[in-house]
Length: 208
Image 1 (cartoon, rainbow, N blue to C red):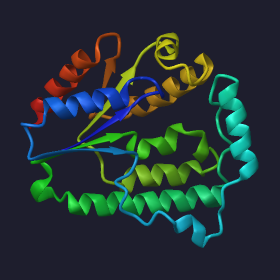
Image 2 (image 1 turned 30 degrees about the horizontal axis):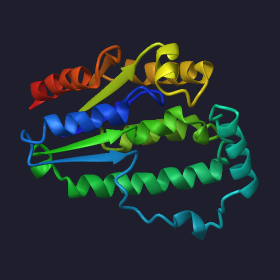
Image 3 (image 1 turned 60 degrees about the horizontal axis):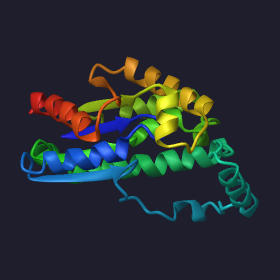
């Protein structure tokens, strides 16, 4: 079974995922957590195309951190974004082959973001929208998508890495995603991590 958590940075995705893994450890043969990708595809594919880290950008990011917030990074070029999308797509397909349909129901795969990152992160702002829609259509779909949401001010107070306006923009993008999904649910993060994980656990157990 594949479930995905989406939500703004600071909404509690990692904390809830870790708590959920503990709760469901005896319900599945294996429980694995992934951040965005499976990590199977070659990591150095960008070097083939001579994409290198921009030292100036790294300095700018450090300055942003010292100012108190992590500002949105400079978007990738359309070419670089496309290459990353292709690499990640290969990773998703290989990962799903390994977690094949004959064993998928016995295993729980928990993803933070999954391919929905393509739709929320400023990195991929220059990527043509039609290609993103194509990826959404062809890539393996999760069994359940959980949108962890709360008011921007509440998320900021929990993890003040981004400004309230930036969190609000993320919330709007995630709302747009979850509104399109018949297998998506919203859970407000106004209770403890254990209580939120229990709500997610109940929805998962309904599906198995």
